[in-house]
Image (tube, rainbow, N blue to C red; front, side):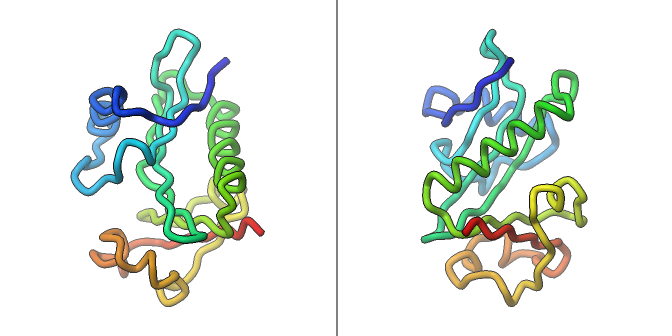
Length: 143
């Protein structure tokens, strides 16, 4: 059993350490309040993901999972809860970038799009201003 909750300022050190151990950079990540945490009943971090909002669009960032504790079922449930939260927050679409196209994200309805299709508000994010031509951009419509 695990639960998903919004991160708080008390989670900063734990989340940043969790992200760093995965090999991702923490410089440039969104504020801690943008993160969702999946944790065990014993309060052990199982996964984190950031959901930044730009108007009616959301940008998913820094998906990190504890590989020793994560199962396919947990990953699917965690990601499904993230999508449900985005819908609850009345977002119309979600975006993400990755180094390569991922079947996992396609299962959840994400499809690859050209950089020209990114809303203007999102284009200001450093993910799209730095090396966006070397990354795959995916979108999921929620409405």
